[in-house]
Length: 328
Image (cartoon, rainbow, N blue to C red; front, side, top):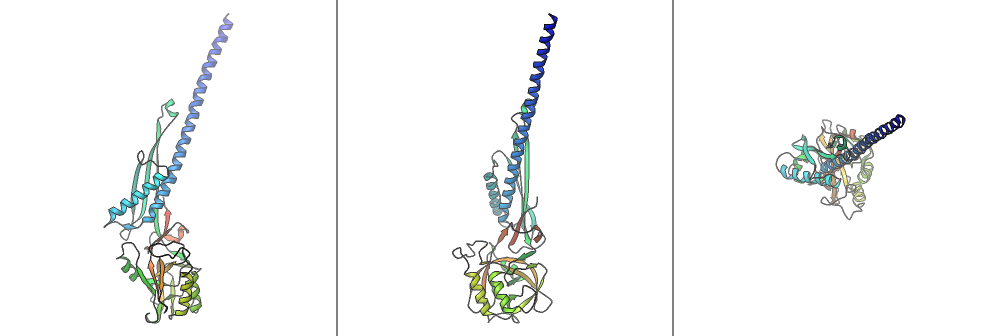
């Protein structure tokens, strides 16, 4: 009789042990599922914050003072719009936005931090209700210090900055090459981009039409190209200008990779006669040619994520041509 009692007791203990084991197993399995949910939410929110700050950077830079409030409101609204499109709940989550890295009185970076609460589905079994997930990202615009594909024309830094200081939208017209009645000391605006004198009109025409294939960096010293070169100017300009396939791009409405959109060198006079020093690069859109060698163009703003990060710098002045990068 006692033998049967022992068997029943052992069976009862086995059942209890099995039940406890199943409870522990289910609790661990539930926690694994909860951790997986947290990981997925974390990944989604990181991608959302990254996308939001990169999109907002297209609106930078803007002044710290003046119409700062309107600019901040517009940028903040754009950032929140991208967050919401990518799965962030603006009602339930905490969103913090910070503009910074002031250069020449303008904000050049934006940082966003989002905190969301992720409730556990199985955690309450062992007394865990949930956790908070915080994700942040910072993006910045940086001026290019090395570039390629520019046309053999430029604008003097002082004249460019003076004109741009009176522009609200960064769009203003320039004469980027003088005609036969202009010019100073034989310099009409053409620059010898390969740094080797002697290429003359043939090189100028090709570079104007198709861009220069080599690299040019801030600090380079380049010779100017003497002479009006009205014929090569007309041929090179016409080839590039007429290659627009977007219905005629203008400063108000253009496609960034249109042939009419060009890079010009921003320069300062060199101590060496008939040389210039490269200060940076500025995007322009070609607008006209008068038949006698004069080319007009309007300044525009271009921001791109294309290019090696080492080609850009946050210590250089910007002239409208910027690289957008995630820096945090």
